[in-house]
Length: 237
Image 1 (cartoon, rainbow, N blue to C red):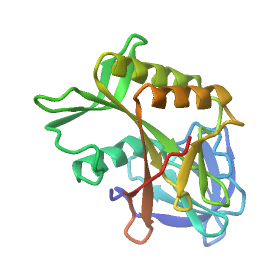
Image 2: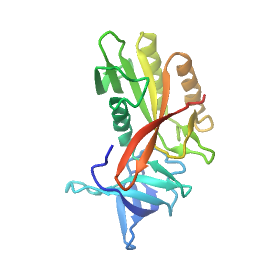
Image 3: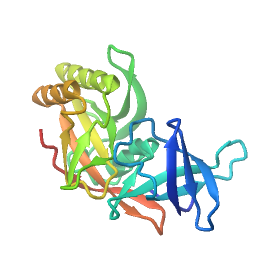
Image 4: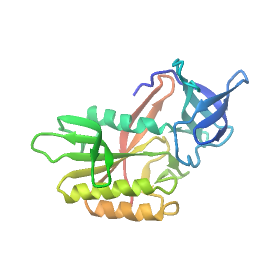
């Protein structure tokens, strides 16, 4: 995926009010930009870190800048824009880069489904096959040893999604939880038992019930302003 605007580098000063961040530009000036991430961003908001942002020319935006990437541990890139996760996964599927999600005729986004009035992120359909329901989760929490963890905060919403996916399996459909790993230093993914043990337990139940777990790791090209999901990594329960 090529971002609509060029990535520009800066230094993070602080993230605050969930949706805002102050950065320092190369000339020493400061800029307030939009932070497109409602999560805790654990380990991804250290002041002084190098960050990359884009600038929109939309005159209706109060904050034209959007925070896109951060460098962690002075070597790994992390995409913090959770709004890109569904698009990245869809692009990977349409480009035939996900071996277990090929040979479908149609792909739809945000389709209503389930008993809890949910919307599935992606729905794959093909004649003669059961529909495939795909829920996408963005991953940005990594550890020094390459271990990725999800979630980075307690998520009741995430538990609801797992319950809906299990119900789809019970109805004879195919259900997939796809982790969009926007962290170049993560080589395997596990549930974050210490952060949300209830979600971790339910994830294991979902896997045992037939919900497929897929983790796709992103690669970043800062010069070209591109992000792509290029490699599948193991999910370790």
